[in-house]
Each structure stands twice: as structure tokens, then as C-alpha cells.
Length: 266
Image 1: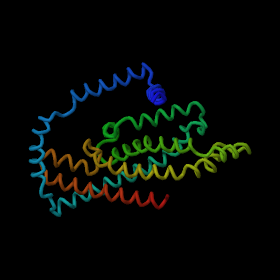
Image 2 (image 1 turned 30 degrees about the horizontal axis):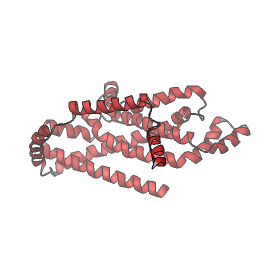
Image 3 (image 1 turned 180 degrees about the horizontal axis):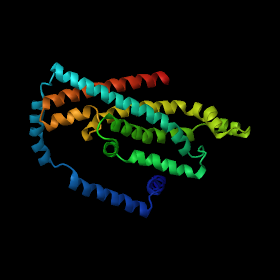
Image 4 (image 1 turned 90 degrees about the horizontal axis):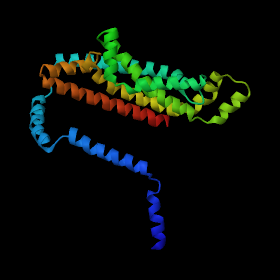
């Protein structure tokens, strides 16, 4: 028992007084935040009947051929926005990640500037980028495509850079020792080792682009989100339920496709 008493306090030995104060502050912040923004039982109980009423008005979905044809065109536009934006973003992420990767970038210490730019792209939400591009290039699919490009660079730029940083150093050092250029080291040593991780990130980026492109129409950046916004604005809830079901099927199909591709690659 004496030996156990000597060992037990070691579990808390790593917690300094400053750390204890920080954890205590964090706990207090969570409690205060829950009191300010968490839904109360009364509000939840009052909201359930309204949710039931909304669902009742959304059934049955609108399956009129003319409406389904309009939805199909918007879905096609949404998929085009996601596909083109993701492909362009992945292609642009490759050189950007090379410039941002620590220990790999030809820019040396200035690589942190590129990494900061990638962090900026990732930090600003999609809808904010969409609003900026709508102002810059106008309403429509072009603004949505540019938004997906920037969002994909923020996502893939980070993971591509990390994959390059984690690549085996011995082949790179061997090529550098015989006078290979930075680009030759990238193509001959770094990319072959980092390729599986980069391909996985690219597939996740494509899947993410499909989901993101759905909501861009809410701010006028094209796609099915624009049709969904009109349905809710005009209280056409049966139209909205049809759109939600179609989007759900599209996202499931994309997840299934990317999972199969990922399994085949691995």
C-alpha cells in the first residue's frame, strides 16, 4: 500500500499551477457559454411541434417532371462547380504545398508566408469566400467555382505540405548529394513517397467540394443551393424536401465512389 501511495500522485505531477488555472478557466468558460447559448429544455419542447409541422408540410416531395428537370439542371451545375473547383484547387495546391513545406521549400524561412496564406484560405468560411467572389465576378457558377478552388487549396495545401515534410529524407539527401536541383528532388524522391497520402487528401477534397458546393447557392454562387433558397423563401416546402433528398443521394453516391477509389489505391 505504501508503494501505491508513492506512485499514485505521479499521475498529476505534470499539471503545473498555471496549467491547473488554465483548465479551471476553460471549465468555467464552458459552463458560462452553455448557460448563454445552449438550448433550454423549455425551448426544445416548444420547438418540437414546429419541427413536426414543418416536416408535415414537406411531405410528400414534389415529383412533378418539370420541377425534377429543373432540379436536375441545378444538380448538374453543382457537380460541375465541385469537380472543376476541386481539380483546379488540387493542381494549384501541389506547387503551393511545395513552397510551404518546412525543410522542403526552396524559399527557406519564407515558406512560413506561404503556409500563412494557406491557413488564411482554410480559416475563412466558404460562404464568406462565396460572397467575396459574387461581388467580384457576379452571381452564378463562376463565383462558386472560385470558392471551391480557394477552399480546396486551403485543405489540400496543408495536407500536401505535411505529406512532403513527412516523406523519407534519405532519398532526398542522396539526390541532393549528387547535385540534383530542388525540383529534381521533389519529382524524384518526395512526390513518390508522399503520393498515397496526397491522393487520399485529394479524394477527401473532392468529397468535401460536393458538400460545400450545395450551400453556395444560398448566397448566389450557383448550384442547387440557389433553388433550395428560393423554395424556402416562397414556403414551397415540398420542393425543398425534393431537393434535400436529391442532395442526400448525390452525397451518398460521392462518398461511396471515393471510398471505393481509396480502397483500390490502398
